[in-house]
Length: 246
Image 1 (cartoon, helix red, strand yellow):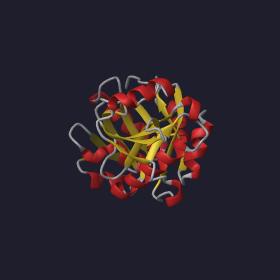
Image 2: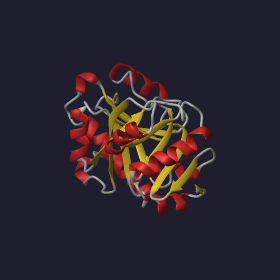
Image 3: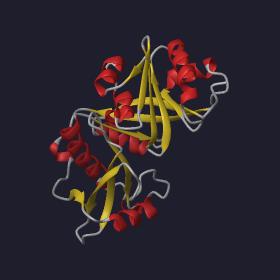
Image 4: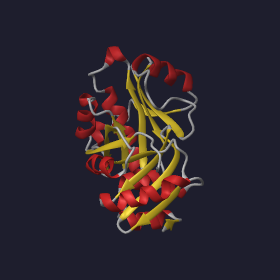
């Protein structure tokens, strides 16, 4: 059964944050389906990937994936919680390998003392400044100024006015705020600037969307620790390399 509204998707996935983010409010180009308890959402060019986000019992999900893949471009990657992704490798011949990473989410705003609002705010017309910080501190960042889906950047400034940390409101949707491009000037890490810019963005996006999420590399334990201290819950996820329906 094809789902045609965000409300249909929410009912089918029990308002799961990952699936609702993938649905992107069912903007043009998004497609979604349900089969029994399984749900699949196809999201083109979401966070720089064509993603088929799935949830549900592995057997039902595998049936659904095999049915919908012929309707999608070969660039789509299946994304799921990690245990489910591991099961799907055995049920979908030609899939894999599994690429693990971490999804983190919260609906609870950080406490006011974590926000650093006196030093932090949304930046206006500062793309060059943000790009320079990312080039120095996070050259592999997935979010960079100018990409489709990036709405705005926040930043923390030092006493001399220089930008020392940044984070983006990127690929958010009505039901889920999303954060990407978090970076702090290399020489100034460990001073709480990253925590402050994240706290500010988390609070802003929770106020606007009700919850906030991000993804982080599994081996980035320092960042995961910061996000956990800001109240985020970790959910291990994985993506399967693109494969043919066969």
